Structures are given as C-alpha cells and as structure tokens.
Length: 479
Image 1 (spheres, one colour):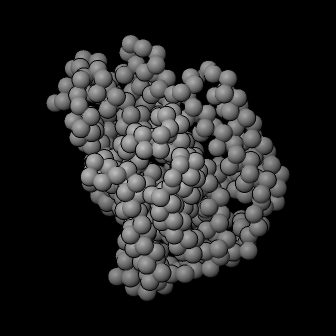
Image 2: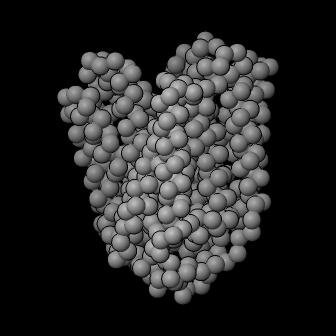
Image 3: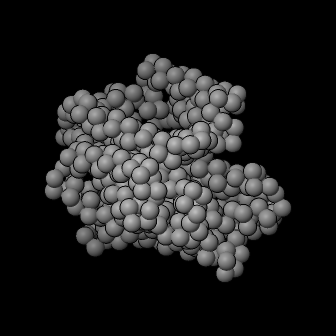
C-alpha cells in the first residue's frame, strides 16, 4: 500500500483532528456492539424461544468472526486503501445492526452478528494504521491513547446501555445506536480522512487460510472450556488442530517469497514485546471483568446493579487515563511506560488476591484494587499499541491485524481461565488472580528481551506497495 499522506501533507491540523474524531467514533461503534448484548441476552433468548445455551452464540459468533478476521482485513486495507475499507466496514456494521434488530430467528440473528463482527474486524487494524499514517511520530502516542480510551469507553457503557434500552423498550433496540454512529463515522471519513491508494499485493491464500483457521480453532476451543471443560474431547481436538494449522502457517511462510505475513517482521523484538504485553493485559482484564462480578453476586451476596457499579471502577479508570497515557508516552517513551504498566498490573493482581482472601471482598478494599488494575491496564494498552504500529510489522496491515488478534486471544484465554479456576472449587477466586499476576510477570520480563534496532523493510520481501518506502529512513521501534 502506498503510504497515506503524512501529518504535514494532510490538509491541516483541524482537518486531521476531525479525521481522528471520525476514526474514534468508528472504533467506539465496534466496541459497543461487541459488548452491548451481554445484559439483554436472556431477554433475547426468551423472545426468540431458544435455550440460553444456544443464545450464547449471539456473543461468541461476533467475537469469533471479529478476532480471526483481523489479519485478513488488515491485508485488505493495504490492498484497497485504508480509508475505503474503513468506509465499507462501518457500512457493514450498520447493515448488520439493522438486520439484527429485525431478525425473526436465532439463526438470522447469529448471521447478523457475524456480519457485525466482520465489519468491526476491519475497523480495528485499519484505524490503528490510519492514525499512524496521519500523525507524526511524536503525536502517535497521544492519538493511540485516545483510541485506547475509546475502546475502554465502549466496553464501559455497553452493559448499562444495553440493560437500560432493554428495560425501556425491547432487546431489539439495543442495536439501533450503532446505526447513527456508523453514519457519523462514514461521513467524517469521507470528508476528512485522506483517500490514499491501495497496492497490487496479491493474497497469499495458503498462509491467510492456515493462520485464520488455526486461530479460529484455538479461540473456539477457549470459548468452549466453560461449557465442556478443559480436558473434554472437543476442546482438545479443536486446540490440537489449531496448533497444527499454525505450524503449517509458520513453515509455509518461511518458504514462500511473498508470504501473507513475513515471519522476519513478526520476530522483531519491539513487535514481540508489544504483542506479549497486550496479550497479558487483555488476559488480566477479561478475567477481572468476569471473576469480580461473579464473586460479588454469589459469594458476597451483592445485587447485579451494585456489582456493575463496583466493576465500573476498572474500565472507567482506563477511559480517564487513555489520553493521559498517550501524552506521558510521548514525553517518557513507550517502553518505560509499558514496564510501569506491567508492574502496576502485577501489583493489582496481588492486591486482588489479598482482598478476596483476607478482606472478604469488602467494598472499601475492592474498589481501590480495581482502580489499580485499571491504571495498570491503561499504562500497558497505549504503549503496546505504539510499539506495534512503529515496528516494521506494524507498517503492514496484516501485521497490525495479527497484533489485535493476539490481544483478543488473550481475552478469550482469560475468560476460559476463570471458568477453569472457579470450576475447581474452593480458592478459585484467588487462583484466578494468582495466574493473572504470573502472566503479567512474564509480560514484564519480556520487555527486557531482545534489543530493538532501527531497521528497514527489506525491498525484496516487503509488500509491493511498500517497496518504495523501503528506501525511507529506518523504522525505529517504539517499545
């Protein structure tokens, strides 16, 4: 893909920030749709006359299509142009939302959720790439901090908004807010985001298929753990087949001249560190967002509404700190803030273990622990995104897509781990956060692994549209 116009070449400061606003609205729309069905799910299954176990497909169908398609949609953004793909993505999201609102059966609702997930899969890596294209190096941290805050805001408001809309009207109306939001994002992109050009890079379909299918099977295995158990035959078979397909992808990518994703780019220390940190952060975040309300509503006897208000301390902190983190990264450097965030994330897991083990989950101790967890997550999310976008792999859409896929694989694994730990019986609540702390510790250790050096995209192996940029100054690692 021919690089998009730089900040200096794009119209002007005001226009660039309007472009950022349009991209952030698109990001918020996708995140909102991801989580807005969680509260109304029981109303949906009652209205469609299906059991709750089948109704879970409304959630998992979105998550699966959203996660596994991101590397492919990242490549597609390079091929057709990132602004064009973003516009098509928000239209797809709006169409899926309208279809879901009118769906007469569970099957059609699930299809519409797959459509919404596919549209959102195109939004996330495309927005990261466009934000990096539109802004200079010293501004990227700030705008990615805003992007992180918008992700947190969508996660934070989705559950209460979905519950309020369902109570006031019907579960069908929970999809309506996505339509005007998608329209605003589309209009803003057409008016303010530079068009750019696509590339003639062909799709290396064997690598794309093996990567997509392998990740899809592994994520499906993780989502099946709460229902089937870790050692059940379906989970083990799915996981094994997924690992084998990923092995096929790695082996094939090393042997092909123009692979779907160049393994040499993925091995860059900056990209590896950012991806591992993001995986650990999303694992811890998803575990907390599931384990804490379960603890409060069962062991502590709290009402669902009270548990929701307590839990809001975590994503709410992330929303507030997102833009602030971007500014701090700009001043102090991405890797330094990443290490601080991982350390605070470890401290938060230790605090949660102590609170649940000794204080019985008392409100006075639990809220500060969740705030600390939110601070750590915020200080990891933005510098990890900065490191990924500044790496050589981050200049390729499929590389950004894979980074986001790894993030949400961490979320799927975190949810599965909660089911395993709580299913084990006594002590499961604290075991959840012991493992989260250990994984965060590995993520912190990884920030010292390897040494990032400025590097160029190899003109022989870079995608066709990026070969011209291989002669540009070296890509400096962000983390």
